Length: 216
Length: 113
Image 1 (tube, chains in turn yellow, green):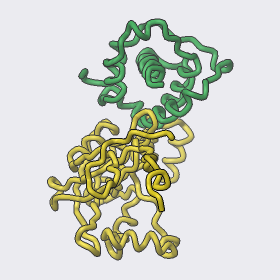
Image 2 (cartoon, rainbow over the protein chains, first blue to last red):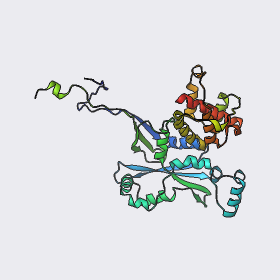
Image 3 (cartoon, rainbow over the protein chains, first blue to last red):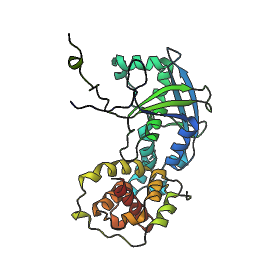
Image 4 (cartoon, rainbow over the protein chains, first blue to last red):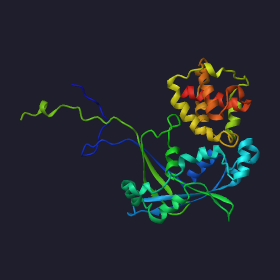
């Protein structure tokens, strides 16, 4: 009979521990990571929305960008695009900026979401419902604020955190990532406690079988 | 750490220009995933390499033992894919700074496999 030596289990129930890495990520680290990817600074604030159960909450991340950072200057575009822009008042965003922001943007929130009961329940639990959800939907794409002359966009901080903790070789976390809890209340003090469970092959106990030692 | 990824690459790469015929290259399957992940992560930063650091690449390159990789060959296809994926250009169309970037990234990819 083959036996496998597992990590020594020291609890009374003999329950196998799940090896995991824990991280506490601050809002400042999230912003710094994104600024380092974009190569320019931007305005931001974070708000913690408490869910149906106080233990569950969601963090809203509002960003504002200057036009000069995200819009392609007229002389940078090709002839056809320049003519189109001139005649249609269309705006061409820098593809490098959109490429960087896209993975952290919200998916299109439309009527089809109303049919997805599971998603609605999940969002309700973490506090993303009603007017909050409408607000996220409204700013899920770059929106120009004429009064302030800036572009507004809500990004999903949890998507940025997943990217931050991803293995650069695979583009994915090395295990199952979960946000255990959100701490803090203000834009500066909010932080996420994150666990990445390392993938392991937890084997069933392969010691002697009952039949081998116990005579019924 | 140096001020920018561009300066880092310029300090690590040789001035030898790379000339590759992009029509005759094949990239081995083992490189495809990391190439894809690296390109997706960096293509949006191609205009700001002088302003940012790419910490994971710089750390990997700084920690490698040059003697161990002295005989390593870098497949041509890696340069071609990086040039097209990040700069949307052929290798021969890249300027010296852009060539430095793909030279360093090609080494990073080979030592990461």
